[in-house]
Length: 258
Ligand code: ADE
Ligand code: ZN
Ligand code: ZN
Image (cartoon, rainbow, N blue to C red; front, side):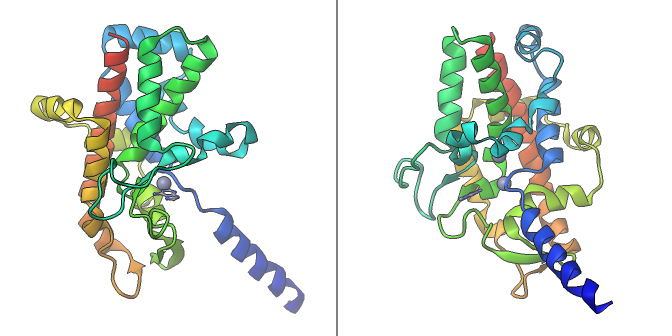
C-alpha cells in the first residue's frame, strides 16, 4: 500500500499543475461563437461558409487555444490578453512586446476588411477573431500587470486548489453544467437598443469595460475559499460579458463582409 502512495500523490500534484487553462473555457468561447452565428447577416453567413467550410463560429472558437501546442504559432501567445494597470488607459499603459489582444483584434479586422488574403490566411484571421473577441470580454484578460490576470491569485473553488483566472475562464461556467447551446439560449436576450449600443463601442471600449469590473472580480474572501456565494455575486456579469462578446463578434463580422 505504501508503495502506491507516492505515485498517487505525485500524479495528483501533476494533474493540478497541468490543468491550468488560461482562456474562457470551451463552453464560454463556443457560446460566444454560437450567439454570433445566429446574428450574422445573410451576406456574412455566406462569406463565413466560404471561409470556414462546414465549421461554425462556435466550432472554430477554441482553435486558438489548441494551437498553443504548436511552436509555429508561438507568435500569437501574447495576443490573448492585455495589461492596463489601475488608473491607466490602453494608450498610457506599457506596450506588450509581440502584441496584445487589442492590437491583434484591430490588426485582424483591418486585414480582413482590406481583403486579398489567401484562403488560408483569411480562415486563420477569422478564427483568431472569434476567439479574441471572446477573450477581451473576460474581465481578467485585461490584467492589472501584477498577477498575470489573476493566474497568480491562488484560491479554492469548492475546495479544489486553483486560481482566480481559472474561476473566470471556466470554473463558474462549467459549474452550471450547461452545453454551449443551452448556455447561449439562457443568455441570448439582448434588446435592440443594447445590440445597437454594444456594437457601436470600440475594441478599446471593450477592454476598458473589462477593466471596470476589477474591484468586483477581486472581491475574494480573505481565506480565498470561493463557492456558491462568489458565483451568485458574479454570474450575472459572466452572462453579460459572454452575451456582449457574441453580439459584438456578429457586429464586427457583419461589418467586414458588408
Ligand atoms: N499573462 C499575463 N497577463 C495575463 C492575462 N491578463 N491573462 C492571461 N494570461 C496572462
Ligand atoms: Zn484565449
Ligand atoms: Zn483566460
